Image (cartoon, rainbow, N blue to C red):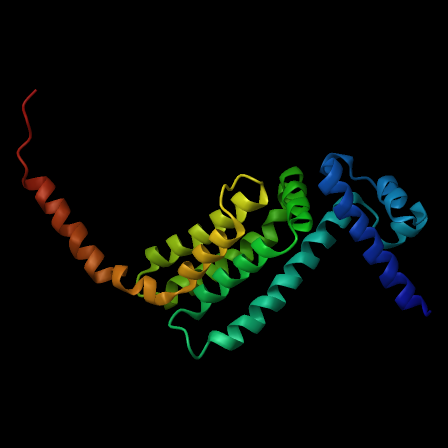
Length: 212
């Protein structure tokens, strides 16, 4: 085995050990010593890969993000030509994929990011760009955001064990969120929403106020 392969195996072993520790004991128990014990590596071997706990958490986040970015890229290639809202469809499908994947890694990362909020900067920046793309393509940006928020709610409630829904119900709801035909009749283009808002404001202004 060459040095590069050995180093990659050690790195992966350390990361898998970190996930196990965070998921089982919480991020507060994650230390380089604990990773060494869990993985069977020497502490020097762990430190050769990661100098600090924060470096481990950052590597975990980057690995998870890379996994879902690859999924998103492949999904976008499939739906770009067939969906009216390919960016929204891709994000909904990616959230569904996260919800149906083994939760230990995702839950571990959520817990780790709660402990170190600075880790949220990179995924927040990416999400901001994705939301901009979704709004730009949507006939009704608010409705698109509601569909995205609904999918995210399904993911988080499942992730934290709070959802009373069965796996079949989750899949059925995700399918409805992904089906544009279910939502077309509810879309209100921006001009229509602005007109409604203006009419409501005018009606409110015309309504006589009751005297105290």
